[in-house]
Length: 289
Image (cartoon, rainbow, N blue to C red; front, side, top):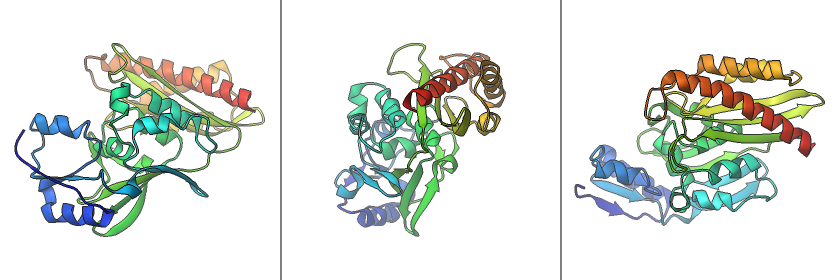
């Protein structure tokens, strides 16, 4: 590793000022599970890392009228421990519980993972399905970014130079809603998925409503399958419809060939797992109703 300085600001304002001082040579440091590897491989060579570890307002989860506010420095493992609490979607807990290994979950942070922009990480699937919003602060002040506008390209997000992701907001979910996260792991539990799908939907009588379908490892960014959502909205769930939804998902994903499968194989798996995830979410919604 090349030499770099580690700065330890005590407030968001101080962190933003330090990043502005170093410009392109400075990087915010959250959990470090991804950034440390990039620095060791010399893919990035910052002269300063601005640690966010000593900024207390970036840690923790609180419930407000507009939803669940999750501080960017909250560890993945802390989300696991919210299981069963009021106002915490089961889909959120289920997804964070399935990230890599406990060792990683004890270190990785909610904000750091999102800012990294990896299209194969698990949490974006659930957060997209839950209509989450990112709040960021930078030299120009504070702004919010709907998560479905946050990811731009491979490892590229809508964060502007010098901006810090401060929290993620998960809004209250629709009544009678349920969610499911399914992923296919070809090798070990700490590997990236070949394909993974998060579904959130609710039932209005017998018909589907508020449908969200999101996939990871299916293209250059974590993606919402909007065409699939539109196909399902207002329909009575049935086998033929779910099969059609899977085929439609296969036609809109754009995966890469890699060690976890060819692009064609991943398209087929997207069809299968979208079908399965919708079916499982419908069953959960019926059970909870």
